[in-house]
Image (cartoon, rainbow, N blue to C red; front, side):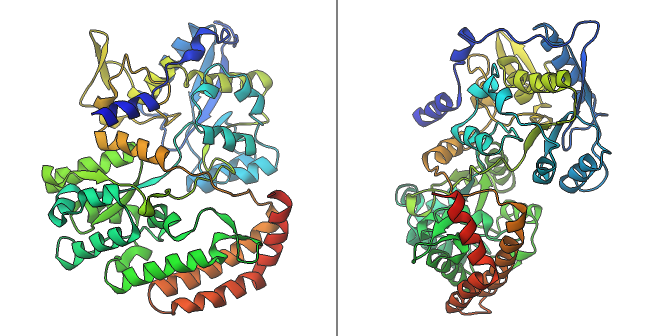
Length: 481
């Protein structure tokens, strides 16, 4: 309980800035609100709850002297990450406030996205609920804003499994690679699960757990000769791949990991076929812990665990946000101001309630000044900011929102956080990067599957330098001091 209270205190902000924040800037008038067109993946303009949300935002902002007419737009046809940048760059998309989930760099390079530096610096609320890594990312790449926790995949295993092995306390207190390997191997060998772990097309999720234990400490590292290289060209990565190859040979890794989709891995974990799954901290951990008990019983309750080696989960890049909201640079000045005012309002105490709880009377009720969730609460998800920062814990008892394991996963993500060393490559460097990554995928997959010996990785490193490594090293030396 003490740990839960501690993490609630960490995650909650007392909103000290409210005492001295200036009044919200005036936007539009009652008779002439500023029309803002909003586009976000999976936010459907035909959804009655979405329309109600837009109306509530308009009403609450109007009470602050900010009059907006918020139009929810339908996404262009096709895969969102591809269709949105294409539609914006060709002029077919006329949105003002745009959520990107990839493809934003092309638009930024074309001058289509507004630099948000001054908006953030002058914000009444947004800057105060940003995590340090949010601030660093926005400073490095000021075209996207995403108020969220860093994406860290936290390992989840079943309490009943670890208790049966007598290893629950061992992994919590001494999470060495050897102890993890022992636990995972015993789970398979003793028939508790079919496989220890899997992946959804790669070992990315497992990397979050094992990278630092093997010395893969950042995206860009120095090799034995002191040259700047991507982690793939280091002895540390070779050691990590050797570990994965050992696990695969021992039958611990699901052979379907290369072709499996996220949903496939989910189903196998819920069905009790996998011993471990790495899930994003917070709400996703909450979902997995609930689903595993729904499918396997209360004794199977999930337990969140520290990274192998007890050093850090995978380092978090601050080069740029990988997704988030942008403002169309071609929108009129008053529309840009109104668009950011909406983003800032959604970072306010009132905005956080709308974003995290949904619609009063539908997703939650207020009884004696406290929030009570309805049976429709699980239908709601944040349409702006994923962070819980700024949500008043005197109004919302956060323990009703997620399981203790989910809150503990936030605590673990912060405790084992390390900032990455990474850069956003210019367009002329991308072909070199793509070439070495393509080679890496070929060699690493073959090594894990046992189709190549681990020592062949030395040959890959030689080819790394021949296929773009030299050019990448020269460029990295100019931007990383």
